[in-house]
Image 1: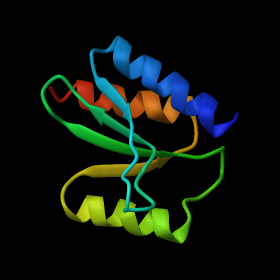
Image 2: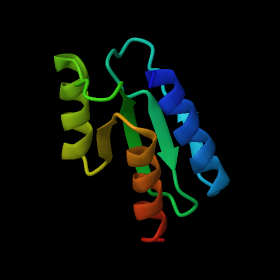
Image 3: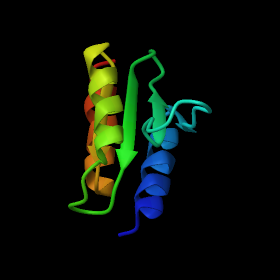
Length: 94
């Protein structure tokens, strides 16, 4: 499945669970993850969307690692099921 289709499906699912779902761009700062998801209680997940089996570029992985070091969950998501699973897992922690 194309990266864009995975991203769209996960965003729609997150919104159906009352999460905020944003396309994340950061002018002047390259390699930030594609999506920023915020739960109704303020939990944040940053998702870098990839086609199944694809990996983040070195720059993307550096930013994911940097976010994780600051206690923000940042992950590479390569399937709709994985993205939905993250939303569900963090929804149950509310």
